[in-house]
Structures are given as structure tokens and as C-alpha cells.
Image (cartoon, rainbow, N blue to C red; front, side, top):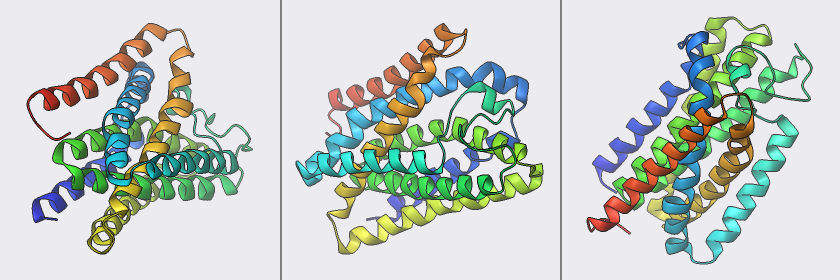
Length: 259
């Protein structure tokens, strides 16, 4: 592990952290226009990154055991989201309507703490996935980091709206979300240090990330393509996400790069 890899990991994690503050920075009219396409784009980038970058690298490192880890991650994330409240990535949430947690009562005191706890766990996994991918190759790292950042935008926009709907001020909401973003750095540092003593950790983390990304892309984001009147915009966003990651992947392969 060289210094450049470590630097790239924490730059990527830092950009991910900035994306986490998007909800309090971007204007609601802009979000209402752009968020549906952004959610669809995130679904395309996540799913293509899973199948073209993350899972193949995990299988190369861990063999068939990678599928077991990915499956366990998929199921664990499903159970966690059902227990803490399902993140719903749509334009209404971004506009400030608290539809993200279907079973949460408006103003319930447990909502902000459950939301932030869920985000913290999610960000630890994101940071770990980005670090593990950069340890494979810069290309895998950039693809994974890009998918994480693109997905983070609509998620954190919705989380910001939910905190405001729960009665939190703008400053308090941004401070809380900013603090939660720091857990991604902890996840990245854990992988960077852990792989020094346990090299197989890299493949395991990638497999877990693959299962997590698959759940988010297929269960949380993909159904949004069929919601609302702007289905064509969403479809275009989804295809652009697929084509971007797919194009970069095959361009690297044909140029003689990693994989």
C-alpha cells in the first residue's frame, strides 16, 4: 500500500462527505427538476459497478466465498432497512416532504437518531468499499467512489429533508449529517490498516460492498424508474449510468488495463 493510494482513498471519501451536505445547499426547485434523473443515474452506476467491477474483483480475491458474503450483505441490509425505516429516494422527499420512512410517525423523537445511526453504518460500509476497491486498482477505486458519491446525493438530500421535517434547524441538520459523514473515513482507515495484517479482508469487504450496492441499486433505486410522470427522464438517467461505467470498464480492458 503506497501513499498515493491512501491519498486517493481519502480524497474520494472527502468528496463523498461533501455530497452528504447537498440537501442543505441545493435549491428545492433544482432538486425537483433533477433528482428523478439523478436517482436513476445512481441506480445505473451502482448496478454496473457491482457486476463489472466490485463482484468480479471479490470473486478473484475470495473465490466462491465471495457470493456467500455478498448474499449475507444483501439480506443484512434488507433486514436493517426494514427495522430502522426504508430510505425512499424520490423527488418528493428532496422537496421536503417526509415520505422516506413509511412507518415513522411525523415528529417522532426516535426518527432522527434512527436515521443518523443507519446513515453512520451505511457510510462506514461506503468508506470501506472505496478503500478496498482502490487497493485493487485506481480504476476500480474511481468507479466505486463515483458510484458511492452519485448514490449519496439523493440519499442525503432525502435525509436532510427528513431531519428538517422532524423539527431540526438547517444548521443542526447539516452539522449532524456532516458528523455522520466522518464515519466513512473510519471505514476506509479500518480497511487500509486491516489489510496490512489480513490480506483476505480486501476481497471480503468488496463482496460485502457488492451485496450492499446490489440491494441499494435494485431494491431502493431501480423501482423509482417507474414512479412519476417523467419516466423517460429517469430511463435516460439509468441508461447513462450503465453506459458510463460500462464504457469505462470495457475501454480499460481493451487498452490492456487491470482485469
